[in-house]
Structure formats: structure tokens, C-alpha cells
Image (cartoon, rainbow, N blue to C red; front, side):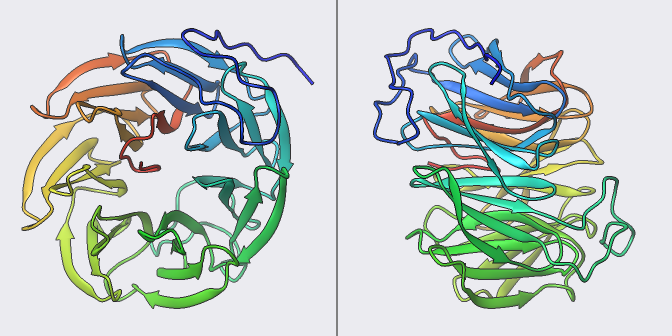
Length: 350
């Protein structure tokens, strides 16, 4: 295995072991952000200074999905080039283990000592067609691998719908919500076994559901329809109760911690849109960069970091004024972003 370097600034020692019982790293009060770069490993952002501190070379190409354990000790990346996930010790920056997943691993969520990873055996690179599907065999289902991080292996494999994409958990963590792009559906699964509990067709509302997030109180579920320029709001019975117009090609979506605002990243219009979570009226459009899919609040909720892949930058936004305050350039096609301590975002949440 190659050597991977990460400076252990402000961290306590963590035993290099696959188990998750090791002590949590200690950071400055503001914490740290991890950004997956499809062409440059994982950038480590010091949130106290809002500067890039280091880079972790994951050893394979194309890291996209990214997640972190609740104690901050282990980072997980989904690597297209290796058809695997990398389990990374955040203290040393060493890859502890690669876990084979399958072709095109993409989205990662970590809950407890399990990682949930979408992968698409039939998917090809490139944009989708106008009807929402990529140029592939739409009959081939996507999958969600459930990985036991203590054992370092896949323990369940959920056979999903074509092009599984976004993942979210119920408030009690017992259910898993999945968006299925080509199938234009939302499916509900038992989070432990992967068993399908319910399928909600969304095709009559639009095409290509992608981002998905549960409100902090657990009463509303929102999902973006990438090719229909809208966000759907579902209640706790999975009924669609509201259609909200967005800018072009919405993807990443998140509530703020209070549940009072919803944030949506619009790819083609290069905006982070802010909506009132009660009235669904638009509060503001914030100009950002090119192909900005995912974003995260900082752990103190004071700033928002947006990963903009095609402009190779992170855009920093003041969460109160909703104004851009900084651009962190020279990234390597950033895809996803998570923080430690965990914060609200389009991928993760506390």
C-alpha cells in the first residue's frame, strides 16, 4: 500500500485499527471539512482559517461520494476508478482498507458503523437524455451496498431501481429513503436489512429525482427533480403536498438546523437558492460556480461551503447575510463535502 500523508494538526492519537472504538480526533472549535475531488483525492479544509490544510491521496481515481463516522475517526470515499470505497483514518490520512463495491460507486451515507453506498452496474459517463435516463440499459437496476465498517465488508446488497442516487434516513434511523433517477421514483427500505417497504412513483411530477433530505422535525421530505426544475415536498405519509419551482437542474438540497430554510443547488443556473421552509417562497438566489452539486454548513452553522466541480473551487457563503465571502480555488473537480463535527448539508447531517 502507498503512503498517504495528512498532518495531524491539533489532533489526539487514534489507534490505527479498523474498529470504530478509537477516540475522536480533536480539532479547533470551528472543525474541519473534507472535500472529495474527482481528480485530486480529498482536500482537508481548516474551518477556523477557511484554508486548504492538506490533501489525502486515496490511491485510486475518481473519489465522489464521501462520508464520515460520528466520532470523526474514519472517512469513507466512493471511488469510481477502483469500484470500491476507501476507509481512511482521519488522524494519519492512511487508507486502512479498500472494500470492493461494484461498478460506478457514487453516493455515500454513514450511519453508526455502517456505510450505505449507491452503485450503478449499467451506468455510463455523460449527461442524461431528455427523458431523464443516461445512455444505458434502463432495465438494469442500481444497487445500494451496506458495508459494516468494523468488519470492512459488504453485509447486505439492496437491489434498487435504475440509477439509484440520493440517500436519506428517517428520523429514528430505521428507514432508508432512496431516489431513483431513471425510474422516477422514491423507495423506502428497512435500513438494517434493505427490505423494500414502499415505492412512490414521481413521474407525473417530473423527471430525475436526485437530491433528498428530511426536515429536522421529521415531518417533511424534500427531493429535487433535476430535469424538471422543481423540488417536491412530501409529508410523513409520503404524499406529495407541494411542487416548488427552482432554477435549472437542481440537485443538492438541505434544510438548515432550525428547519426554517431550505437550500437548493442549481447546476445550470449556477445558484444556491434559499426557500422559506413554511411558505416555500424563494428568499434569495446566491450566485455560485460551475457544476455545484453538493454543499454543507459549517458545524457552527455560520457559513456554507459549496463544492463546484467544473470551476474547481469551493464557494464560501455567510449563512446569515447569504452573501459570498470567499472562493477557495485550485481544487481538483470537487464533488462532495462533509464536515467534522457533522453539520447540515446536502450529503450529511448531524
